[in-house]
Length: 130
Image 1 (spheres, rainbow, N blue to C red):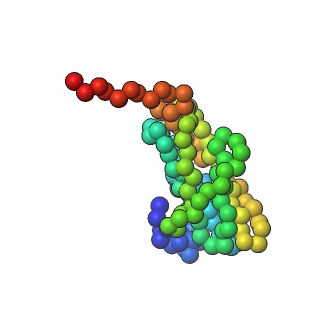
Image 2 (cartoon, one colour):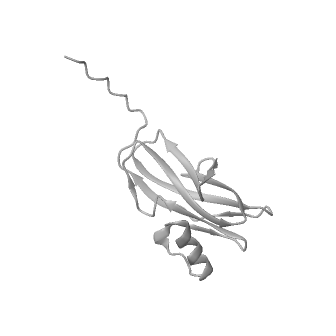
Image 3 (cartoon, rainbow, N blue to C red):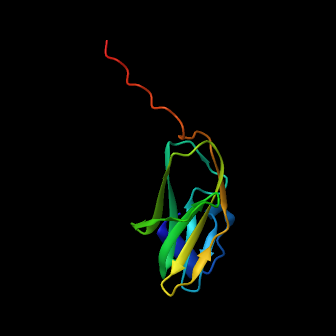
């Protein structure tokens, strides 16, 4: 979902559906876990979570499987979290957003699956030139 679509949805006061991911909504802003989407399968060796946010959101953090909250970086209209060294399996991620006035809101978890993880994999040796 692009930022323009997100802003349009907010201005029309639409309820954002589960397809777009869990929503953190405040009177001053919103944060939506755009990627991964609910039920998505990840097969890449590295993954970057994308959180869309509008309004007075000052800080966004992400937690995977109820683990420690990790700070997200803000760039080009989104918040991002780079994830690596994960094993295949089922996961869930939640977003926590803080407004400029200190209010903190947490999303419902978004469930997704990693079908080809990277943890504990040995790098392949380069092929020898004949």
